[in-house]
Length: 103
Image: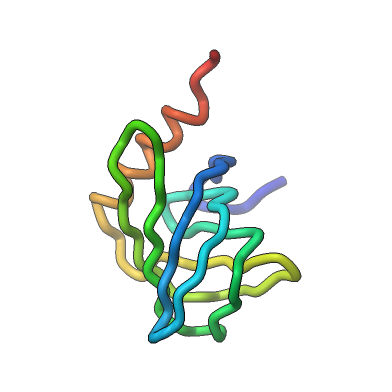
């Protein structure tokens, strides 16, 4: 059983990110109201650093998310959003609607 307070939504969106002076690219593979996970990243920022994600969802304009690195994996990292932000909630709900659509 999963004990998360926010449900995760599987995604596959191209993402650029910046952490300090470093910049990279990866794939946003899941997102929730409280955090996100990237895989296939081009660089691994240090734990605890603030990271700014630029997520590209067609046909919607790219959106920006800000969080802090809380976990690294062999192919990516996870972030947690630091503040309860209504804009993040709205964006995640939009993403959930896109990925849950039946073709």
